[in-house]
Structure formats: structure tokens, C-alpha cells
Image (cartoon, rainbow, N blue to C red; front, side):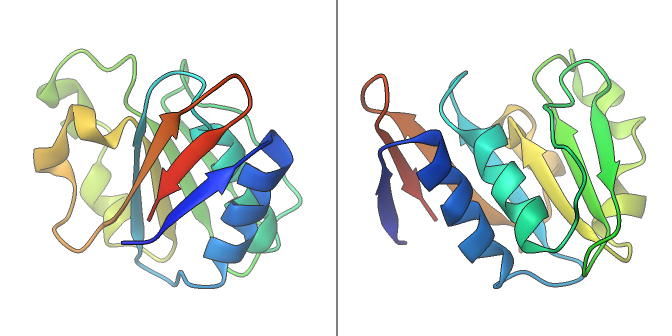
Length: 136
């Protein structure tokens, strides 16, 4: 496991861009960390790194955003507001997890039993107002 220190939102986004070079079709990236710890900033970097010009926002209320136009389709989930496992399962996760794109899941640790065993877990820890520790 590698640990990085980010001192700004721009650095977190840059880490996401770098990480995008290492992901491929069928990858599931499970993100865990408190509110404001940098998960969405990291996803912005991944989306940009995969060549999509889409604006990235947290799918907190819509539960999933789909981004196209890059090297791979990107499916960005947010489990924060999902109440129970059955609600999460109704999203049709398997179709996304085993489809033609990449899945990025914020708050994945809320339902770890639904995450495929080969998922890449990334942890975000807030160290100060600007500093984040990111473990991949």
C-alpha cells in the first residue's frame, strides 16, 4: 500500500489523474473517507485522466453519474444516502461492475459485501483543513 500526502484539492485531483493511467476496463475503485476528505476531488482527476471532459460532481442525490467521452466509460457511485443493502442492490451494480467501463464508488465501505473482491480500495483521511492522506 502506498500513502500520499495531498496539500490541496489540486494535488488530490492530480493524484487521481496519475491513478487513471493504472486502471482499465472492468476495474472497480472503492473509495472510503469522511465528508470532505477528497474523494470527489480524486474522482475529478480520474475522469480527466481518462480523457473525459465531463464536469464531475458528487452523485449524492442521484446515486450514480455516468461520464463518457474518454478512454473508458466511467460510472461514479455514491453510497452515502443509501439506507440499506437492498436499496444498493436495486442499482443493478453487477451490470456496472462487470460491464465495459470503470466504477468509482464513494462511501464503498458502507456496503463492503457488495464490492467485488478484486476492487482497488483507496482511503482518504483528513489531517488538517488543507492536508489529506491518501492510501492506495
